Structures are given as structure tokens and as C-alpha cells.
Length: 312
Ligand code: NAP
Image (cartoon, rainbow, N blue to C red; front, side, top):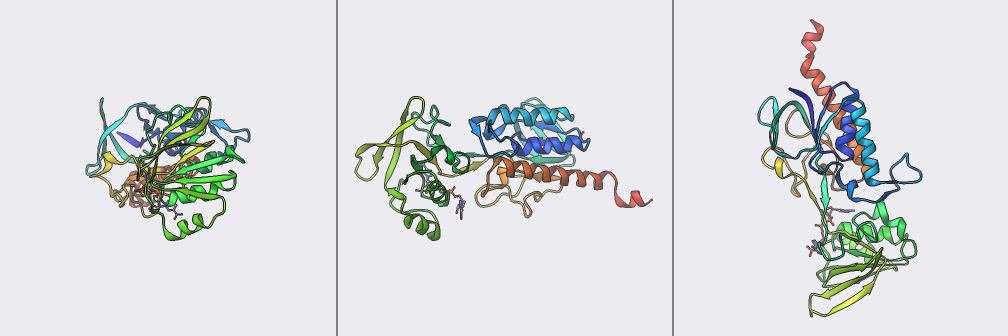
């Protein structure tokens, strides 16, 4: 019987592992076949405190992992296939085994949506990004393109005006999905212009992004647009498929939590992007992992040493 099972191994899961391990809970981390979360797909990380010269995303996650293991976390690179939170102990099943736990921390993250166009994968981190907060500063005085028509796209476009000499928003329809206030801010900004009814079909460049191939969806015409950066802001998909019938999800499929830590099942806690539609930063996920581990520890303490027993 495990005391804490942590599902996921991005900044949230591994920070939860560090805290749970240091509380002597010997957590079992089911890290996924590809551990480390979204930072494994990132190049330079310059906004994680403690690294004034920046650090590569995968190197940062190796450090998280080593720190968790140093204090006794057991990390298995396996995918969780299903969970059963209707039982006590709680059950978590992989292809190899079913693990039983007194508490579970869900830190499975969310994946940014990509366009899945030619050139995109090759140029990720070389001009193509899904995080303006993380990568905007690399494109000072450059032409920056944002794809998407929602609030995220507007927010990113507005933020990116601090860096680019020009920001072009490309949207597949002729009206925005974004809220009026965000849309108005973007419309009113002198550096932002819009290309409507248009899909980005290909990213061109060798070492770094140079241009985008566009197709006008209204009349089918094709064109090329020179661009130094492409920020894709077309939404995120939380990794909650295995929790669908087990935990309460919100309308967008994220795990619902009244306080950003607890879930509708006692003993099951949540941390990181799987519960965060707003911040989605490594540092906020790490903070959430810390909170989840501390609450799991308190929960276990109450479970294992009930107050009546302590008084007796
Ligand atoms: P979203 O509202 O789902 O918008 C996604 C946008 O991307 C839509 O305009 C959509 O086009 C477009 N899109 C989707 N797939 C695409 C594809 N394959 N190719 C091209 N375009 C594609 O997602 P979001 O903007 O990330 O926002 C998520 C939630 O967070 C929303 O509820 C939003 O209000 C909230 N949010 C709020 C704020 C804020 O208030 N400051 C900031 C960020 C996010 P269509 O319009 O044609 O579907």
C-alpha cells in the first residue's frame, strides 16, 4: 500500500514528489512513458527563478527528478491507463500493475495545441512557440505572428507588442472568439494587425523560422508571409481522459477544484496545468505541486493518527 501516488512528472508532479519525499512519505511517481512534461519539448527557459543564465527545459526537469530521487521518491516511467477512486484504498492501474494508495496527486498537465503543419516540429524552439511569456523576449524588434482568435491569442499578441516591431494575428475566421474587451484592446493597439479567414499551412526555415505559407480560406489564394516568430495560441487540452468518470471536471475538461488543490474525492489532490487555465507556468505548477503534497501529508496524518487516538 502506497501512502502517496503521484501521477505525472512535470514541474507539478516532481515538486509534489520532492515535498512528499522530504516528509518521509516515500511517494511513488508514475511519470508517464515520456517523463518531464511540456518542458521536455522546450529549449531555453529564462524565467525559472534560480537560473540567472537560463537553463534548457530538459536539463531543468532532470534536476527536478534527481532532487526528488535524492529524498527517496520512486519514479517509474510508465503510463497510467485507468484509476478507480470509488474504492479505498484508491487504485491506479498501469499496463503492468495496479497500485493501491491512501492518497493520489494528479499532475498530468495540459498540452498546448499545435497546428500540425509541415515545418512546425522542426522549428519548435527556433521561432515557433506556444508560450509568449516564456519566449517573447527572444524576438525583440522582430516580426511576430500569432495564430488564433481567442482570449489567449489576444493576450499573447498584446504581450508580444513589447518585443516585436510588428505583431500580426492570423485567424481562420472573420470574427474573433475572444471577449470584447480583449478584442478591443488588440484592435486598438497600433502595432497589431489582423489577417482574417486564413490558415497557416507551412512553416519555412532551416535553422530558424523565416516565413509562413498562408491560404486564404475564403477564396483559396495562397501567399507567403515573412515572419521571425510564430506563437500558436489555439488552446490547450488538459490530460484528463482517464479521470473522466472518476473526478469532477469543469466545462473545458480541466479537473475541477474549489481551492486549486482538493478534488471532489477525499484523498485525491490536483496540481499544475491540469487544473490551471490561466497561468500555465513551470513556477506556478511547481508551487501547486508543493501545495498538493503538503495537503496530502495533512490528510494522511489525520487518517493515520485520528484526533481521538492522539488524545487517548
Ligand atoms: P479558445 O477560446 O478555445 O480559442 C481558441 C482559438 O483558436 C479560437 O479562435 C479557434 O478558432 C482557434 N483555433 C482552434 N484550433 C485551431 C486550428 N487548428 N487552427 C487555427 N485556429 C484554431 O482558447 P483560448 O484562447 O486558449 O482560451 C481558453 C479559455 O481561457 C477561454 O475560456 C478564454 O476566455 C480563457 N482565457 C481568458 C483570458 C483573459 O480573460 N485574460 C486569457 C486567456 C484565456 P475558432 O474561433 O474558429 O474556433
